[in-house]
Length: 301
Ligand code: PAF
Image (cartoon, rainbow, N blue to C red; front, side, top):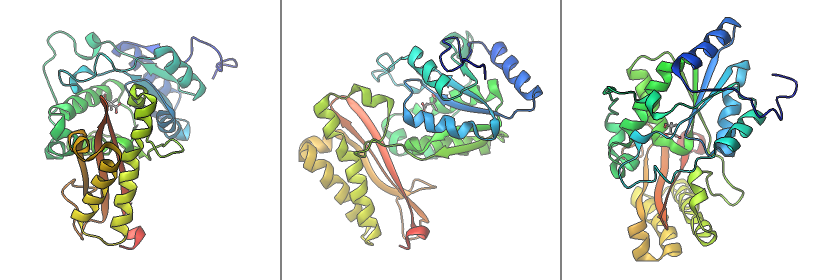
């Protein structure tokens, strides 16, 4: 890295075309470097920085993509409101030692005449996919395009979007893409709130209410580890959200609170080696998701 890269506002370089990003990749490969990619929609926070840190392992040439992908938002969702903080994102990438930002426009990603879409399989029929129809087709389509453009060796995603991570792993395997998928743990605020770009939407009172989601998941884990039945686990999670939002509002605000098999996303059974406790709850107008992975073999239940 250049000696003054720490403050140089022209770093890291930003590529906005396919030809441009491929030229950087070609040169990095020529220099013997592996290529890693961290796909993001920007509004970077400490969770993203942990993904970047993982991506930089083994001196890989690390590319952060910043693109708010329209095909994964349904009409009426927050596509227009989604925080766009490019200058701060670039500074964060600079501090984190990112080698290149790829920030394409819609015309680059979906040029005139573009028509092919990747359809996620049954893993997308549940949890967020059930409440956001077409969302994961949009995610798979844009991630497949980014993989095709960059052709990375490694791609890093966050466990915060557990269903997304599973679906992308599945897509990579099903399409025989020679890319290692790395999934990094959730990063939380000290009080437990999972970091998310959407936390920026929360007013101070909503920020306090939002804690009910991580608290609910923790109550679910306690119940699971105590050997309680799945229905009880789920009921205990609902109780925590209802105590915060009120019974009726909690019902309306909760898209799902579930205990599912961490690999199949089917309802967890005694035979599930790992259980994903997952929830999506609307706090005010902000839809938050969170999850806890409980490895049964490690916890002895
Ligand atoms: O997780 C995200 O930020 C997005 O879904 C992704 C993977 C960058 C695709 O747009």
